[in-house]
View 1 (cartoon, one colour):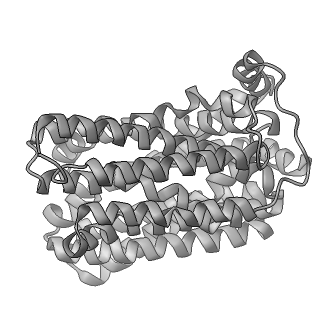
View 2: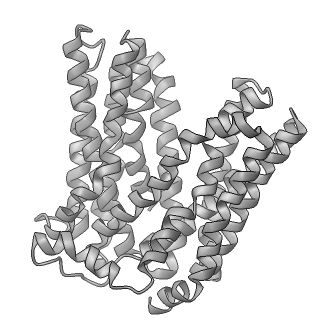
View 3: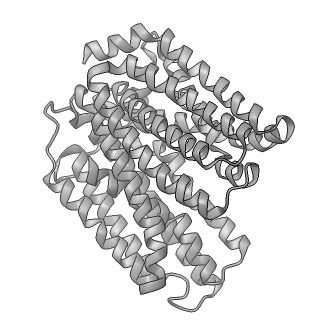
Length: 402
């Protein structure tokens, strides 16, 4: 789970933040750089082609691993092509920017496809008691990969150049290829849907045949929404709201925050084996909600390093624990015949709620101030906790069936 999570997370920055830095250095104007944000669209629409990966099996390495190796090979080729044809490698004309944009889009499609099949493989191969810790390990690998292809790539670019940096990142993906080849098949073989129509409509029909389906969908939307609401303006709050320098925010919020998230995910995953799904979701969700109040305390206290470090550590620790339990929930809700499609659709639904809390956040801060804003993010987490409590019997039954 750790190296496969790493392979899943590595391409993201190479088509977003790191690529934006390369374009900036190469002299691209802001309008061109702005258009490159559209490269991320495949990650939000990946559920559209997920049924293909449920229906069809490639003629090597089994139902899931065959698709993973194919996606990883496409990623290595695409990232290497970006290295060879990127801005500054050849003439920095508009044609070059369109070419690198096309290549970045193809890499994003391959990356989203790898995410689809990795999520499905993880759900299929992990035994139910292993899901919490398995999810934590994959999240840890994902975060480490984003650090390597983000901050690591930026540092390398000044020493070996952008082209060689991207070539190196393509080579690093061999870790994912080798791990996929050596990984086991699921213990219980699953027969793929007999037709593409079944692969498209079967997951929807199967999910909505459950009596609790509407409540489970609401739970997926609202469980992490308070955490996401608070996170939309955290950096702006630390710099503009309480007056910390960008360096201080970078070291503590990004460095300490990453470490706390990883520790939280691992601890949460380990605790899930004892607590079970329902109690883990409830406990970790409560911690997520309370962690938002630590930022309210910082807003009230003003510029205090002790409070800042404590708030960031607590918030990221709780967020990591909540992520481990939430990913385990999504895995538990998937039928193994349609794992790729159902997991992709449910994770897209979860992201939908987080997208819509961003735009009103700035207006809300201007209207009520930082202290009240963070209290409201605490209140925003309560509906998710109520839904967990309301669905306690269903969540316990899901675990019991497994």
